[in-house]
Length: 201
Image (cartoon, one colour):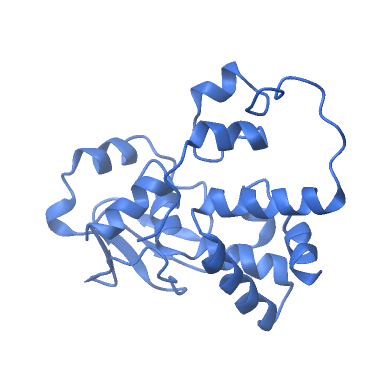
């Protein structure tokens, strides 16, 4: 399963945002990495700004380049606004849904839980993080995995009313994916229109 395994704090510092979750380094060194990171930077070109936005989206959702491009092309062929559809498809990925449900503290942890067969969709084990969850499907924790410490710790005190497109059932440790979220409901700080413009060049 291909994924980014490089230094995460360096990426977070590049964008000035904790895109992998809470980052202690970012709070101490809130400037880009590298020898000249703390110096005044020259103005970025239009292309560089668009490229950075695409990279931010890729790192945020843990998607590599080819997969991201395929998702964009699929979104471009769909009805609706391409950038919004792209984000909705990213939000529908199984690893992201597991993260949004609070079953895992980060998307990377969610990917690991999915890959290790701790997650079920409509009662069936699914170990593909990129699996696209459909509206109405129920995502939950496999019965014998419910006592896992990482899952219990993540769920403890998690606010399940944060996301209106997910309906959580505490007793079964599962949630129903009600519908794809509207753009204004997606909390990520991503300017998807810049990504559309980049791929349109």
